[in-house]
Image (cartoon, rainbow, N blue to C red; front, side, top):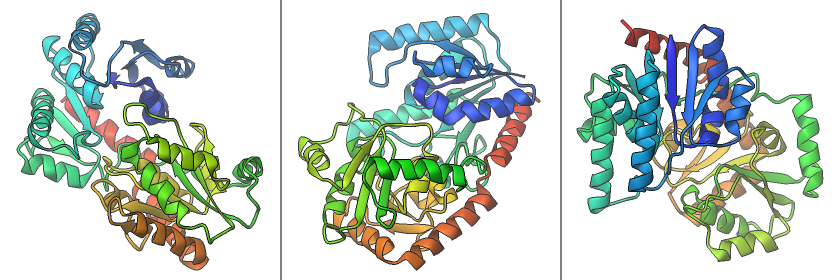
Length: 379
């Protein structure tokens, strides 16, 4: 089977697919990955994965978008695939159109969320029409969240017979071998604590992901600032800044002047930060599913998240973590205080989280199911 995966940004290509690609390659699937240029292409090539670099802009850019569409179409005209997988907004639209014009019929659209979740009025309607077009041009629609799947059906964006969710959700599941506490990870975690002058008995709250407004970084920093009376508590914010939704200068100043808030660079080895932490805080305004939340659960961390679409499925309230009202600094801070002070509760939620991941989100099982979907598309 020849599979082509098209996604907008090369970083997402590597973070979301690298282990899945190895799994598919080991089972005889000939994989080609297409994304905008980036160092991740070379990393994948070193693993034996064929990649093609085609520039794609995340934001609307008519001339560049038409150029990207032409380059995608040209590649697909000269390279026939059994299945084409498209995901993320721009790559999905361009990939669906290029597949249609190159006469590829087995196209699977992966819905990872809705970038327009907070939009209203005409702008939201335009985005919904684009999603409807992509669904129309796709033979199968893979949604990573039950709630979003239901919403797409209820909104008339997709034929109910096309769309499906694998198991309890998620696009990639969790590598249980990688996201497991170990002595080796503890050594690396201790080095992180040492780097930030965090004591062995100090408590650490962790956020990992893109650093932008709609990930709730403003609320996270403000909520942590309300915990000044807990002198032995630290906050590690790990990830890369995203200039498409920049943080306010006020929040950046708070981060820079606080001796208890530590910035850590983006890393593909996030598991060592999980082992370093006591509580994972994920105050995103919207998610497709929130895979990082189930990775944290796999590492036996209690997870605090906003009660929003996507996070409601990755975090089970009062079972694997605590859900609080969206954008509420007070509720977020209160939940952080609760889990910092109540070690027994934090440990219980973390243990139950690990058990849930083992039962429902083993990546190997999810990838096997996805491979069966690909094979079924060829019949």
